[in-house]
Image (cartoon, rainbow, N blue to C red; front, side, top):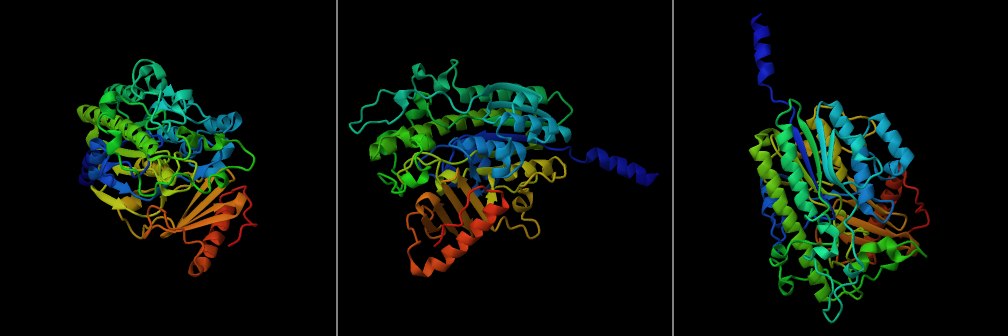
Length: 471
C-alpha cells in the first residue's frame, strides 16, 4: 500500500506534456539574426531565443518541385514526408487523402492530446480549417506585389515604390500590418489556451520577411541605405543564371530575381537589404509581443518554442535575390529550440533538415514516430545524447534544374542542363566564393560526392536522371 501511495504521489508531480509554440517565418536566411553573427541587423527578441535555447546552424530545406519553394517546404512539414514523396500530396486528391488519413502534423498532435491553433501564412493544398481546432486570419502564399515593386531601384536611384506607404497594399492590405495581426492572434490564443486542461500546439506563421518587404517607417529609419554593407560575395550578375532554370522556360521560375534590375548595382542591393532588415526587425518586435503574452499567460515554463523559416534567401549575394538556388544563404533557415530541458545558449553544427522539427515535436508530445514520417527528432542532438551526430549528408533540389549535396565540409552543386558543377569547402569558404571543381586534386572528391548524390536522389524517389552527368 505504501508503494501505491508513493506511485500516486509521483504521478501528480510529473510534469505535463509541454505546450509547443512553432513560430515560422518566410524567406529568412540563417544569417539574418544578430546573435548568430549579423552585425548590422537588430533582432533583440530572436537574440533572446538564441541565448535561451539551442540553435542548429546547419539546418537545410530539402528543396522544391516548383518555383514557390515555400510550398514544398511547408508540405514536407505538414506531412512528414521527404521532398518527392510530399510532392504527391500537392494536389486536391492527395491533400484530401492526407487529411482523411489523419496523418498531418497538427492531426498527430491532436491525437497526442493537444489543442491545436493556427494563424498566418498557409501555402499547402491541405487546408488548415480541416486539421486544426481553431484557425484565424489565414493568409495566402505572399502579400500582393505591385508592378512598381519589381526591377527597382533604377540605376539613377529613381523609385516609385514606397515600402511604408499603405497604398501599395501587400502587408498593409486590410488596414493593419499582417505581422501585427499574427501577434494579435497569439495574444488571444494564449488567453484561451490558459483556460483549457490540454496542452496547446500553436502553429504561428508570419509572411515576413517575404517580399513585398514593407515595414513601418520607424523600422526603415533604423537602416539608412548608405550605411548598409554590400555582402562579401556580391556580384553584379550570376554567371550561371540560365543554368539555374529549365531550358526554354520563362523567367517566372526565377521570379525573385526580377525584384531588382540586372546588372545588380550596389545601390540596389543596399536598398533591398535595408527593406529586408526593416521587415525582420518589425517581425522581431511582434515576436517580442508574442513572448510577453506567453509569459503573462503563465504558460512559458511549460512551453517548448520552435523557431524557424521555410528556407533562406539571397539578398545580393552571388548576384542573386531569391531562394531558387542552392547556396547557403538560400537553403539554410534559422532553427532554434527553446524551453524546459533544452540547453541554453548552445550551437549544434550537425547536418539536419528543417523538417526534423516534426518528429521533434512528436517526441516532446510523447508520441511514437509513425513509419511515414521520414525525418528525425532533433532532441538527441539538442541534448547531445548518446552518439547523436546528425546526418552524413543533406540534399537540395530545385525542380529538375538544380541538385546539391553536402557531406561534411564539402558541397557539390549540379546544373544538369549545362553539365555545370560547382564544389565548395564550406569550412574554409563559408561564403562560397572559391569554386574548387577545376582543381585536379579535387577531382576524386567531386566524383565521390556526385556518386553519393545520385544514390541518395534515387533513394528518395527523385525523378531526375543524373546518369549523364559526370566529372
